[in-house]
Amino acid sequence: MKVNVSGQRLDIGAASVHGWVLGLLFIPSFFFIGYLLLTGDWSQGEGFQENDPGELMQSLYIFLAAMLFFSAAWQADRPDRYVFCGGALVLLLMFERETEAEDTWAEPYFGPVIESDVHYAVVGILLLALLARAWPIFGQCVQQFLLWARSPAAWVTFFAIALYIFSDSTEKQVLIDGIGPAKMVEESIESVAGCFFLASAYLTWAAFRLPARRRHAMPAE
Image 1 (cartoon, rainbow, N blue to C red):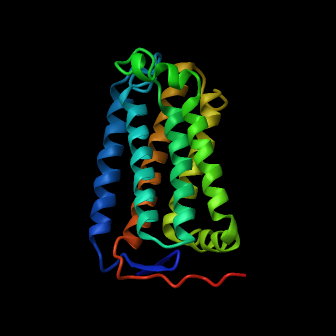
Image 2 (cartoon, rainbow, N blue to C red):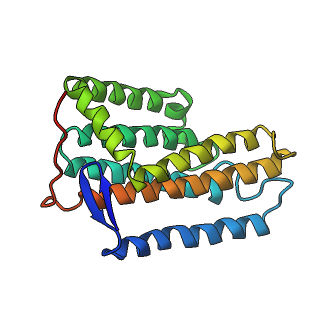
């Protein structure tokens, strides 16, 4: 099966390695989430509180996804580079949202930074700088984003975003009663979403990993 990813053609059918990588990503993760749900204390939300394994796993996936989008941007040309850098910075914002230093070894070093929201400000400034840099070819960036949005990699991202939106209802105990159970279900859904973000980033990176396979840039308006 040939897949067009923002101008690149990714032969997933011929490159079975992608299937193996995604399998190694999803299968152990789902088993781990299932193990935590079966063995945890639902009344306390055991295993899914701040800095517990459930949350740490999704944070790791989101961070790795951001790094893969940066890697894809490094190997791509404009305007794909700006699109992927923007996606990576948004993922870093999500990573920062999940990062807590309280009651950990990192609190003396990063606690004041996190409490003052300096990390959000830094990424926000980087996003504004990226927008300013991309402004002269903003129309092309939008076109390339729409082209990427039709790829399976993007569909995986959109599904992950939908999961995050859905998880918000569980956090507010709209669908599940009890703080502990709601926390376990919320973090489980977000862990699965993090897995999908990483899968999307991997597919995007895989399409751009070979410099010889050049995309055909869409013409400027």
